[in-house]
Length: 82
Image 1 (tube, one colour):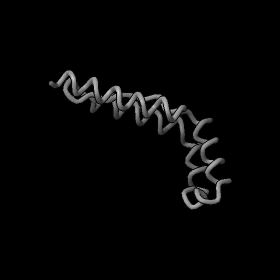
Image 2 (cartoon, rainbow, N blue to C red):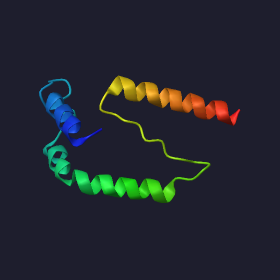
Image 3 (cartoon, rainbow, N blue to C red):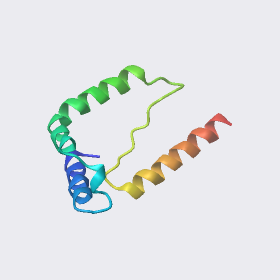
Image 4 (cartoon, rainbow, N blue to C red):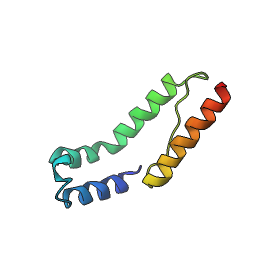
């Protein structure tokens, strides 16, 4: 997901009484490091992904879309292995 979506989710969580315990000030501070974290994640993916054990990048701004894509990706991967 992108930084704007993450911020929106944090704010929603902070305003929801039964989810409030899941959010801290540190979560918001970490958003300032978004670009560095993204660069580090990209480097890790490039260095550790292989033909036999690849990384799959799942767009996550839309939770339902992301969950469906994870299941489809897993099914495709299993089908290939069989």
